[in-house]
Amino acid sequence: MKAFVVHSTFVSLLAWITLTFALPQAGSSTVTAKARAATSTARSNTAAKAAGKLYFGSATDNPFLDEDATYKAILSDNTLFGQLSPENAMKWDATEPEQGVFTFTNGDVIVALAQANGQIMRGHNTVWGSQLPSWVSDSGFDNATLISVMQNHVSTVIGHYKGQIQLGCCQWYNACSIIHLFAQLTVYAEPFNDDGTLASNVFFETIGPTYIDLALQAARAADPDAKLYINDFNIEGEGVKATAMANLVSDLKSRGIPIDGIGLESHFILGEIPTTLQAQMEAFTALGVEVAVTELDIRMTLPETDALLAQQQTDFQNVVSACTAVADCVGVTVWEYTDKYSWVPSTFAGQGDADPWDENLEMKPAYDGIIAGFSS
Image: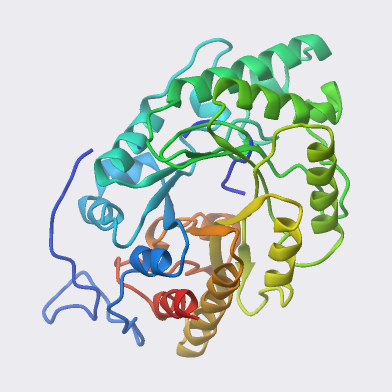
């Protein structure tokens, strides 16, 4: 997955331009007209806040910000996006590529952008079994050494961003890392296999299951005001993996281990949104934590058709409606707002067009579904 959860860290160039989200202008040689486009004139983040949510947001990554001014201008519109997540800039391989050598350049760019635009920053992530530098994954560290390494990483990343964002929801994926504009951190990401057992990774194999406790505790110590999340996929509907997450969170809370939220990644396949999505959100929030949709995209088998776009519109509406209906679902983040920079085609052969804006940065019918979902 392109995400962190309990992990790392969670960013100005303002381009003010008039954006027209409609069919391409006549005479354009670079834009291909879509058979269907969005019709709503409502603004997605404005709609989210009117529905009682904290934000509607998007993931982003540095090359796009540096190279695509139109993309950046849309992302900077805080009536459309009230929150940003770093796709990769705050993960372990990006922030501590060599032991004890930290680099925050890319993450700082995203944080600065969010600050300039008055957007919430969500940290992603400090601890995850993937995207680790080899000095961590292949180190052969013993238990005590790896605990020290992990605690130092979490503390340094979260400490770097402490207080830089003014909203108090520093969400960190996978192990907790990052910021204050919202202060939500996903401290740990993707701890489970689909059968509900804990996933095998260097932290679990070396430290054991208590590595989750230790990561969360380090995150809380580094930033007492940040909200700490655990993030995972395939927990969006009822099933053994969702039950395992609920049991983990209940156990953490019973032992006084800090945990504030569960992130539902929500990387969905077209037409396969769990019918128990709202019920599962309610089951999680009944544990005394909040939830968020943290990495939403809905991929289809290409080529795109009107029928597929219509189904995608319905699917986006159903996901957003579920969050809208649950008081403690705080917001929805899409994992890139545009198909132009989606991770899906390079990961799932023959699939794509998973996002609510197309490759030409135009709103798709899925956008209408998002607005309808917040209005439900």
